[in-house]
Length: 300
Image (cartoon, rainbow, N blue to C red):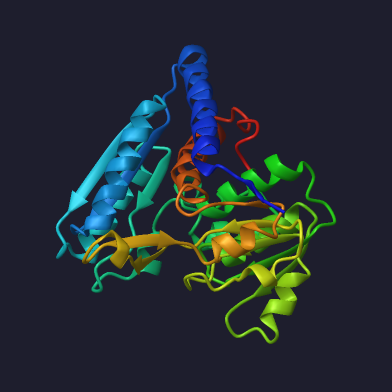
């Protein structure tokens, strides 16, 4: 069996086009422009690239993009003051503080200072609680992107057995909650799960988000299962030259693709969906703030 490749890059482009269409209608019908503010503390190179990409795509879909770049030694008090000003700004509907923060800053305190209605990362404890109890919330972007791709591939997920390998607060736990919300039977597994390969073999859907390169092997996969690989790991690639690396997921792609029914590649799978869903969440936050309902097809 050769698995169908789930093209996250193409799917993300489709989501961004949907967002742009909604934004155009908001402008035309309500004179309303969704606004996204990104706060970056310090100059981490990977974060810099990510923030630039977010800003570019925000503008491309017609939204207002605001960036606050703060020095690495910024005090907690000054950072919280910036967030407070954004909470109070009616033109800003989504606030994202780029992680990781410098070690002298308390990430939990900072995240929980964001207005939950503007928390487009879905990390605020209020949104975590709302998602966990099946209520309307802001949903973390990566799990939301995974859910969108699964819905698109399967239609209904009701009754399917899903195994989420990984228990992080950012991906594993919210992913499990979203799958439960779509009536899957869900198992959360992790690196210490006994007989992990056998647990994974029972799954119609496997979401790998454990942070270990190529950990999930092809002989762990049930024939015909759908595999969503959230992992992004860099490995040495001497064949490309000294100091070169290659990106791999948490799934051994070649062996899994020979067995699975569908699979996301790395790169080009889940990754592009994260920013697309950030834009979708900003649109959703804007619509909710102005009591305009939910943007169809872009929420959990």
